Image (cartoon, rainbow, N blue to C red; front, side, top):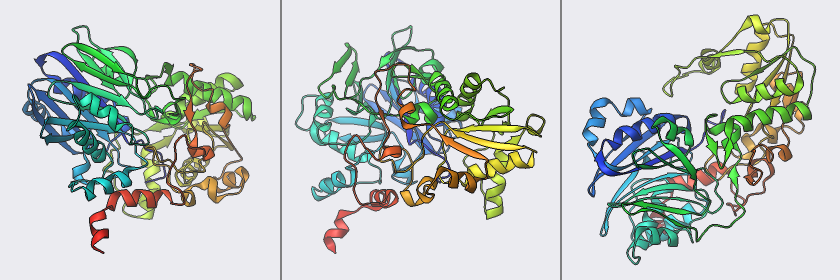
Length: 483
């Protein structure tokens, strides 16, 4: 699971001033956001206050056939979600959007991120008689909104109150009978943006690439801490929780987001090019060719080649047809998985000194296998450059950076030791200082907690990341009380 990085999910919402096939638009948007989660997906449609939804495990085209989309019917609003579980496991009740029917109407919620106080919230609600069907922190967000809605004039007012006591990362889209509401945590850990089509439909999305997919124009990013409400009377904004310095996850630029997206005013593609340029300045080495590990290492490799003057070349051909169902039943099978996914273009590698650029090293096992492929192809030397600093601390905000005992940078005392372990002549990482310069928009502040241990909000202390997630996955204060 932790041999490579995964982001938890992506969200999308659409509001039309007419009844139309909003499910089809949401389907296309989720297709564009598929890179943010390949484990499960779902769509909920609102037709005059009546909610229809479908969710399932698998990729977007597998879960939503033409027949299934037809059954969702028409409506004027829809929200969608793609998911990779970091917390909550693969419980089918955790597949989003969550659809809730409460005393004041219907509610659907899609969430990207992780709450650091999810277990405490769950205990509080269970002690009050709440019944949870799943194990994800999204359910705690939904229950918080419903509880506050009982004494609030509107759902957006309830959300404003909820934001006072939920902590961590959350970019959410909420659908009621009459409104589409998007809100982002005050630190802005996860991206969220607003768009509009030529016929007046408004959309919110984790990334701007989904707006492009449905022919919508990017309007702006939703501010950290902002609540945006879309209804028949237009758009309203509540900035009560805005004003903090912000802490966007730097890995949105390094790895997670699609290169054609623009996040908080900065191009992801250009940020990765800059990462490669910084790497070339900080860690030069003599070589014959610069190659990138598909896909997120490619742009950084271009940047390194541009800055260093060493020719850029294609080193790997990626098999685009490997899905999440690819099974490796044995150790030898797991080793063969790298060969199935990547094949070396030997003509470009044989007899050459190679600089290989990748976005990160987590455990190092997959990296070592990729290096071995280059050796077998006849590489004379292999020098690895990584477009991020070494992982030394876990992430609690929606990225599956593992507990310290499972991170190669924590297992080895020096970079040279890591280099020896993965089998390269030299290894260098991007500096923490350089990561804060990746975005062209100088006003963006980043979270670098997984590199430095300096988290922008308080996280669970003296508890390993895997134990923290296990607590969320299996939490039940009811049984603790019985004991």
